[in-house]
Amino acid sequence: MGSGKTTIAKLLSRKLCFDCIDMDQILEDTYSMSIFDIFKNHGEEKFREAETKLLSEILVKKNIVVSTGGGTPCFADNMDNMNLLGKTVYLQTGLDILKNRLVSEPNKRPLLKNIELHQLGSFVAAKLAERELFYTKATLIVNTDKYTPQQIVNIIYSIYAPKPNL
Image 1 (cartoon, rainbow, N blue to C red):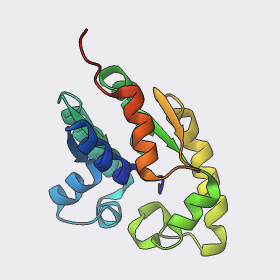
Image 2 (image 1 turned 180 degrees about the vertical axis):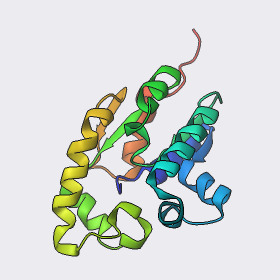
Image 3 (image 1 turned 135 degrees about the vertical axis):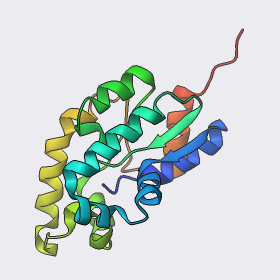
């Protein structure tokens, strides 16, 4: 939540000349409502089921960059499947940066709907600790704290860009 997945995915897909798939956007289009409202109207369990089904449909595609939801790697066997069928990147972002980004958008984040401003830091820290086990299974971990989005894309590109055949 708030690490910049969507921004980085868009920039990286352009640099690689790949399609960019934003899972949250597809789910919003499918349900004709925001992620917040999908959670509210259908519950987290149904949302996670739809998210996992969508991910399985996406993972068979080639030449794509996917922006998942922050919880996607933590349910079903999603992280293992992503690693099996592609390359994964954990955009590791410091707690203070996450808090500053999330404070302005509690109504866009379903998990933040009942969190008071003074509880935000401890909630984000707990959620991050809970998810870290899954995130650290990524094939690449990039600490984003000291880099611009373009610099992050360049780091990822330098590692994952298709290499010319020699």
